[in-house]
Figure 1 (cartoon, protein in one colour):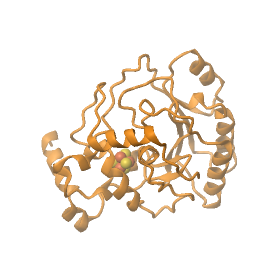
Figure 2 (cartoon, protein in one colour):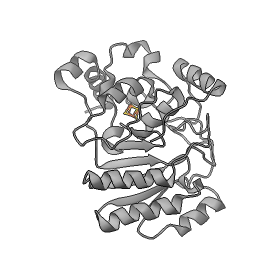
Figure 3 (cartoon, helix red, strand yellow):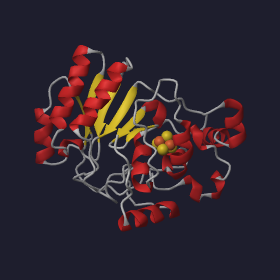
Figure 4 (cartoon, helix red, strand yellow):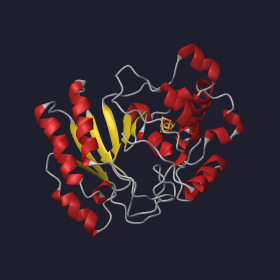
Length: 266
Ligand code: SF4
């Protein structure tokens, strides 16, 4: 099917009447998770979907929070297919190796098939040195970035700033919830890690403090967070190295600069 027809069909499918009839387009994947352990990065890519370039900060997860994640996972009997550590640049977290050990102990004692991953930009000698120290059981997803001008889809174009999305049903989410799964940030569990990064800037403080059940579609989070997410405009987005900011994001960044939102920790 030509891509323009697919785009039109998807645009129709995300409108309220369709969602009411058929339910959300994407189901939450409860067997993959992206854990954002740090929001600092050694690069400043303009359209970073965790907003690390616009507001790099000292917010980071603690080893205790990873311990809590492992304990909630085992208590619920969750057999993760994939657990990925990201950021920001995860190798900059001083406790990365300790966190990895905890996840490997979950793998060893609870569910050996799980893939434990570290997602890195691979940029610079410090990052390279940390990567070399990671245990062999860890998969390294290295994007080998060499410059800060990476082309990304413009996540900071909020659909609510565009009249065409007036009747959109945001509980649809996007394919991230299916492909990447849940997000976990210092502030809790989210429908996607990108959603968690939106909450960090807008300050709704909606992160869940316990691991959501496998039937939970996290729709109340999508309804709120996807309104601000450029990925919701899935078929219109084009990768670019030029910073794109719609009005809602400009205001949110301005508010953040005046006072950083206070979110409750996980
Ligand atoms: S916040 Fe963005 S990435 Fe997350 S589900 Fe919504 S549209 Fe997708």
